[in-house]
Structure formats: C-alpha cells, structure tokens
Amino acid sequence: MSAASTPVVFIAGQLLTNALWAPQSRALEDRPQVYAGNGADDTIAGMARRLLELSPRRFDLVAHAMGGFVAFEVMCQAPERVRRLALLGTLAPADAPAQTERRMGYLKLVEAGRFDEVVEERLPILVHPDRREDEALTDVVRKMAADTGAERFLRQQRAIMGRIDSRRGLAAIACPVLLIMGRQDGIVNQTHQEEMLALLPNARLEIIEHCGHLSTLERPEAVNALLRDFLQPD
Image (cartoon, rainbow, N blue to C red; front, side):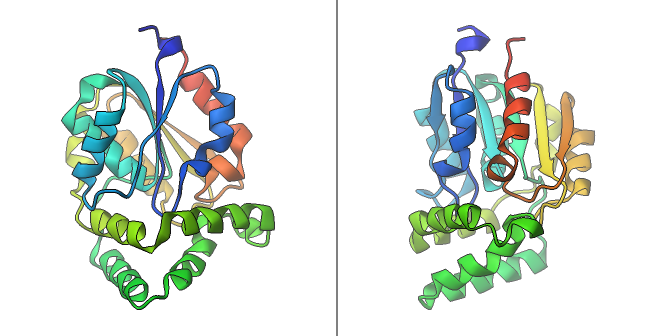
C-alpha cells in the first residue's frame, strides 16, 4: 500500500466525538479514513485493542488528548502497523494525585446525576480564553459532550485514571511523530511536549499560537496544513 492511499485513523479525547475531526476529514478527503471509538472500554489497553481490530493492516494514526494515551498503547501492542503518528494536545505521564482527585470528583458528580456540571466546569479549559463566548464553537463542544453521555464519560475517566506512565516506552517508537499543541492549551503544556520530544527518536513539535486545547476546531487551517505535510509519502 502506498503512503498516498494509507488510511488515516482518528481517535478523539474524552467528552469528544468524531465531530472534533470534521475540518481534518475534509482536508484529507483523498485518504481512506477510520474513526476509532473512545468509550466502549474502561481501560486504555482495551481501547487500543478495539482500535487495532477495526483498523486496516497499516495506517497513519492521528490522536487527540486521551486518544494519545490510546495511541501510546497501540505503539506497544502493534508498532509495525503505524506508519506515522500525530499527537495533538496530549501528554505521556500517568495522573498525579491531584489529577486523580479531580477525576474522582467528576465521577461523584456524574453518579449524582450532575453530568452537565462536569461539562460546564471543563469547558473553560478546553478552548482559548478569547473563544469562551464563541457560541458556534462552544455549541459544538457541548454537543460532543452530550453525544458522549454520562456512561461513556465514566468509562473514559476510569481508563484515564488506570493508565500507565507511557514515558518509559517512547524511546521504542521508531516511526515519525508529530506533536501539536495550542499555545494556550489549558490541559497540557510545553514542558509535557518537550519531554516527549526528548524521548521520541524521530519527532518534531509544532505549537499553534492563539489556540487552546481543541486545536482541530479552533485553528483548523493550521492543523490541516501540518497534517497534510506530515502525512505525505515518505
């Protein structure tokens, strides 16, 4: 299979759906595309196995946030199947105690029937401060969260809390890797990216200015250009 016809597999982060990739799907419309689920399992390993089951023999993998945790596991389970790997707004370490405590709070809210409060609490850290009143954008984010639903979100949280520290496996990822981060990302930071950059043998980092965590929707033209360039034939 030539690189030009290599399918692109997309996997989104928590509370997000395939709508996250709408601009990239259009930009890469000449490529076969697969969308991996991100909430039918409550472990990252299970999500990775499911992604591999539905994906073609060889593919390019584009992952966002929690999807990046799944991508790291895919690279442990079947590295030979991934030609190129793009990681957007993700990080490699496992949760610190403070992060686990925050997630436990989310679980309690959802179990108390207050899922909508979780969505509204997270919204400010998902987008650039200047976009928080952008109804066109925030409506898409709320719709993705509603489509995810409480039960899927609970599985996502359990998977994230139970994930391993992926830094130990980064040196074994031989394929080209593109790291993308919004400068004003409220969840990951440049230190996370530079840590991965130092450990990955064949990676580069691109930081998108005036952009939060949802780079694919906030700055689609910049993300599209980076992906089109990165996913070109070798």
